[in-house]
Image (cartoon, rainbow, N blue to C red; front, side, top):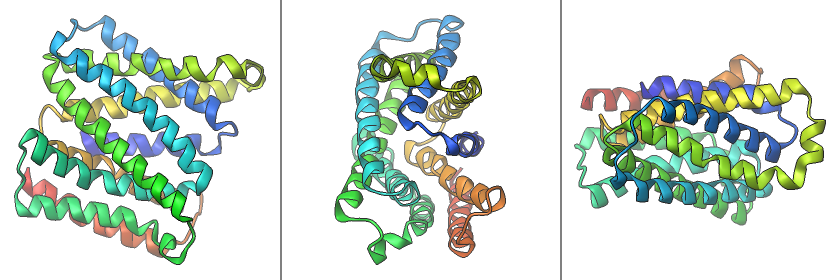
Amino acid sequence: MVLCAALLHALWNAVMKGARDRALTSGLICVGQAAFGLVLAIYSPFMSWDAVPWLIASIVIHWGYFYLLNVAYGLGDLSLIYPISRGLAPLLVALGAQFWVGEVLPGYAWAGILAISVGISVLAAPVLRGALPLAGVMAAISVGVIVASYTLVDGMGVRAAGNPVAYIGWVFIGNVTVAMYIFPTRMARLRALPAKTIALALLGGVISGCAYGLVLYAKTLAPLGLVSALRETSVIFAAMIGVLWFGEGPRGRRLIAAIIVALGIVLIAGHG
């Protein structure tokens, strides 16, 4: 389930790669997610009130995520920022789940999580050669901390909800507040966007909603650290799509990263 979600996440990122206006694209993606969430919420009984504090916390943290992500991408390239932030998140989630939730994992599960984090981080190897300034590295690390935070919060929220589908729906409905912040000052730019671009961004929101919805549901079935680690394999899927679809390089580092991550997946599957 989580590997399918990771592939979906990589596919919509590949489709959206050519977006010319990142801010408007983010807003349209949030609208697409909200529409997907509204359908889930309408056709699901309301979640337990115990999950509402987690839901509010998730919305607030996601605001921080969008803000820090824009700061990070202003300081460095996507190909460097993304692997650092996503590679750090699984380790932080596993540690947070152990000390906060009490989910203790066996040694080989930790080995799998570590392998996935290392494999993802291989993609950011140019950082060691000074390709990213210190401010960019710190921003990427901050994004990783935020990703780990909303992963833990949503993991607790979806478990407290009693109805995971309803919680998933309301998480995405809450994302419409990001669009409400982005659009009012950019209406002229929004009207100038081609209809195809708008439709593609909205579709990207629905697909990304499906991807994260599968991840959230999986958190009711498996330890948070393992779900988080498998989810971040989307970075490797995206890297391989870049090689096979866009002809990007260097291929050697991406293949090495994919092999290390595959080893981590095998170790985690052994835990299951």
